[in-house]
Length: 185
Image (cartoon, rainbow, N blue to C red; front, side, top):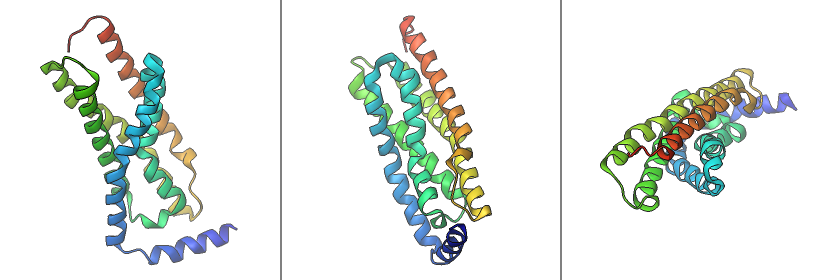
C-alpha cells in the first residue's frame, strides 16, 4: 500500500503547476479565517472556561485546519513551506480582524480608545504569534511527508499546536484577570 502511495504522490506532483498551487492557497486564505471564527463562536458558549481553555484549543486548530486537511489529503498541491506560512498567517490575520470587529462592534457596549488599540495591536499580535508557533509544526508535518514519500502524520504538528494553545490560553487568562480586576482598557 505504501509503494502505491509513494508512486501516486510522485506522479501527482508533476501535474500541479505553481499557478494552480498558489490559486489554491488564495482559496485557503479566503476561507481560513472565517472557518476559525465559526469555531470560535461555537466555543464561546462555555463562558470563562471557554475563553481560557476551549477557545484557544478550537481557534489554534481551526486557523491551520484547512492547510492540514490539504496536507493530509493532497500534499502534492503544495510547492513549498512558503505557501503553508502564507496561508496560515493570512488565516490568522483574517481571523484576528473579524474577531476584533465582532468584539469592538457587537460584544462591547462602550468601546474605549484603549480597547481598540489593545485589540488591534495585542490581540492581532497574539493570533499571529500563536499561529506562527502552530505553523512550525504544520510545515514539519508537510516536509516529513514529502521527504519520506509517505502519508502525513499530524502527530508531528501536535506539540507545536499544544504550545500555541497554551500561549493563547495564558494570554486569555491574563486578559480575563485584568478585566475582572477592573482594569479599564
